[in-house]
Length: 70
Image (cartoon, rainbow, N blue to C red; front, side, top):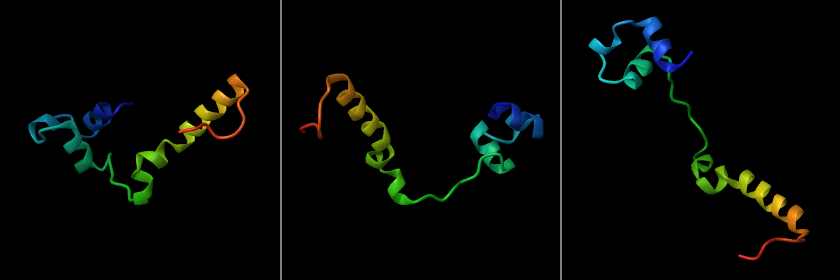
């Protein structure tokens, strides 16, 4: 079930009271804010695992050893 379906199941005429689907979902409790560690918001940390996988795949494909030069 997508967000629109959930909102419409709880409040079929949501468009008459809310300017957007997002606002209705927040008020109905479907979407909730979640507190997270501020460091997790840094793109460098969020993409660290992906970058490591790419570096490993590069090493495996080209038989390279050690860290790539920047």
